Image 1 (cartoon, one colour):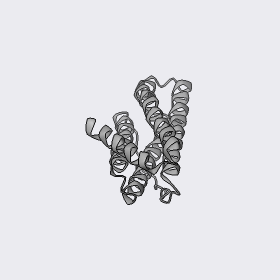
Image 2: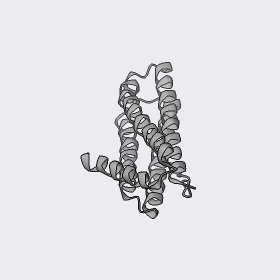
Image 3: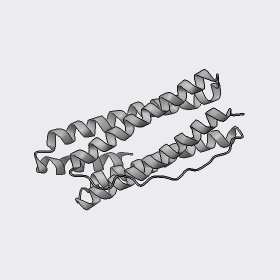
Image 4: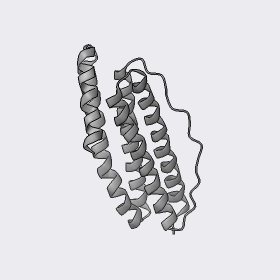
Length: 165
């Protein structure tokens, strides 16, 4: 059985993951508006991934007899000054998510909740990957922000990542 404090933290994390999905949808739509369809597709895939993360947490709560309480999802940021700002936003999302996952792991350690600790190992590893690609995108976007022609090459490259999956 989940302790009340752990259950509350898990419900908060579920809301966080759904909020990330909402944010990625906004970024995908932003890139679509710029006709950067490779980045649009990559961000749309992230929407699906973030929802999957939320569902993994939901399954953990349900499997342990807890009650999932879905919270309201705030409206995401929808206006970006540039593709660079959108990439920066995405990198910040992933860093924030890493922080929430690590705090949840610390809580699981404090409460000696071994089942949650094991569950969180997958998320910790996932966040290494998420921060890697989001940092890479930000670094490339920073390099190419002054050269629109290279931005289209970057868009093409990131679109290929979706097809490779």
